[in-house]
Each structure stands twice: as C-alpha cells, then as structure tokens.
Image 1 (cartoon, helix red, strand yellow):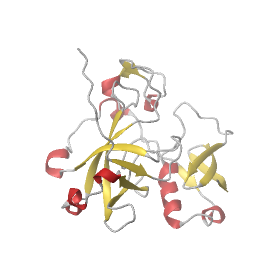
Image 2: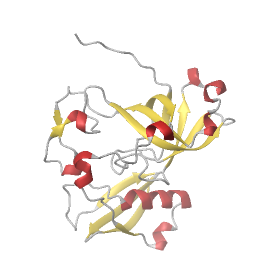
Image 3: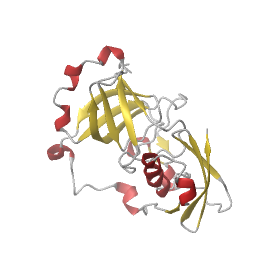
Image 4: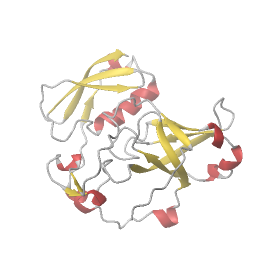
Length: 229
C-alpha cells in the first residue's frame, strides 16, 4: 500500500542558473558558484539558524521541480554513461525517480542575518536552478559523513570530464569577477550532454544575466561571444 507524505518548502535557492543547461552535474564541482538560500516567511526565524556558523558545510534536501511528472521507471539512462546504457534508478542520482528529491552538500560561505529577506544563507557549490524548493537543511558532520574509502560504482571507471577553457580577456572583461570565476568552473566541467561531440556546434549557456556562447574542439572549450540577456 502506497503512502503519501507532505513536505513543506522551507526555503528557495536563489542563483544565476535560470536554465538546466550548464548546471554542475554534482554539488561541489564548481566551487566559485555561489547561491543564497532564502527562507519562506514562515521560517525566517533567526533562532532556527542558531549555531549554524560553526559548520563549514551543509546538506540541502530539495526538489526537482522542473522535472515532468510522467510516472517513474525502474531503470534510467545516466548522462555520464552517454545516455545509452540503462542502470537501476536507485543506483543513480537521476531526477526521474519515484520521489523527485535531490541531496546536495554545499559549503557555507556566510549567514546574512540582517538582509531584507534574511536571515539567509550564502552557499557555494550548489547544483540547482534558481527558485529550487528546499525542504530541509542539515549540517554536514565530517566524523559521520566522510568516507575516504568509499567506492563510486560504475562512476569510478569513467574519466573526469575536464576541458581547457579559452576565455579571451576582452570577453572576460564584460563580466563581474565573481561571475567570470564561476563560469570558468562551469565550463571546464563540460556542460554539454555526453552524446554531443560536434566541433562545429555552437552552444549558449545562460548565467547571471549573460548568454555565454562557445564551441568545443579537441578538449578545448572556446568562448567566442557574451551577450547580455
């Protein structure tokens, strides 16, 4: 017998990703990507954050709110495997699951207690779109959560996809420094789907109010234009 559980949205993640394309594939990969966790009015109580500054990292439990609800399948095709090989849904972090819930470990940068919409949390390394619903926040505990000898299953056999980024100084100058550093992180991890390798194809990544245009060839990603959205 299936049972439904109701969860409240306690906060929303505010960030520069308006589209899913380009979002880091896992939390923590793009350390210069910063976001704000803004609490819903009901939960804007400073006491709820008492003691949180003592933790360097946090777990965010959140929802894949942009996933079409079309039921679920026992197997999915992870992008890291090229989108062709199927594995069990519970052996992946795919958003297409019985309950579209995500789990991300992020770095706590600071607590904004006096912000107009505060108290709010500034975090680094999130892998979510703007306005993603957050259901809960828990501290990361190194003594319990860190497992240096952990095994990564089929992902251990996959090479890390890192690209050399050719970002002309004339284009970088159009960006605030923090957005430029974040984009270097994002682009170096190859935002393209695993099955796309056409060196002549042009891509556009929306980030922080800019449309970053690039091509990829022979392991190098070349930014050739930046447009203001």
